[in-house]
Image (cartoon, rainbow over all chains, first blue to last red; front, top):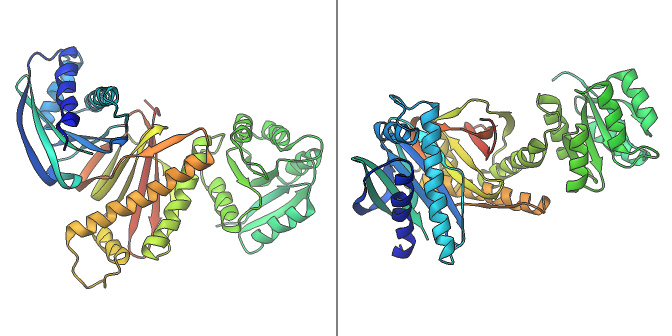
Length: 152
Length: 288
């Protein structure tokens, strides 16, 4: 995968998360995955089309999702993934992807994004590629947001 | 199904005869025939039919005006507009007065019957252009593609999903809709059904082993074909739309909950001899 297409995903997390009240955003491990990824519990899938096609899956645990939703809502305590928290995570996936789309479009790669498909479950797999895809771990105030990317 | 009465409003005796003949062997019974607006209103009040087919071009007041008069008498009246022209403007005008179903002449028999059936069966037919424009075409393509891809018949039904989530066990192909409108389509089935369908699609004997990855790839490809055809047809029919699709993603597992927040969502179920296959379509900007 072209690194120029990947950087916007890292930049968008680094740009958007502090705007929502997160303090420390660092890039963690990067690697390649083969075909299937195991959901950590909460996965938002966003489709890309136009000059670049593919999918990105934002993957996190329930606890991370609650922590992110709570921070997005100005510290409101969220103990379980309720409707409001799901809405927040869905909105986060949308904002991150829209930011990526804007960055790619400014680099002569016009991109459209689909509405995020947020899936929650205890034991499920997500396939975004028939072969390899890229995994980027983003560390957000000590919790991990896994960004899985397959675009071309 | 009980007998359903239909009033045909058309100034052409030929059109009337054609429509009547299509319905001859069905449970739809033509109760009467009206050739102009006044006759239509009069006969509507006389028979109180379950359904009305309305020609657009009538002498004097046209089909839209006539529908308006009937809907004033009964706002729940179920009217199918039939016209030689089927353009966005006509559909908008029709929608404004409360018509939700439209067909273009010449009427194809199975389309006519399907449309009447859907109009009769579903409860939310009061001026819903979304269903007429986006759900009915998907239902027809889904049914056709099941026949094309797998060579099997299916019995279709659809309903609006008013739940905030859709819980799925098995495999689901998720295809994003981008452009206008945005949303997603999810094709899903139990794993046993998906594997049986893959055998049919790949022309493999039922007792022959098929690896899971191949079965899933076949399912993803089926989703891609169904949604690709659907979007092409929408773009072709509704000229002001520019819908595109993202490549298929897939989720699989037990009791996965796909959340439907701020989306209007419909589920189409195809019952086949092999099992149930479902398609959900959701558009952004629906219920909060």
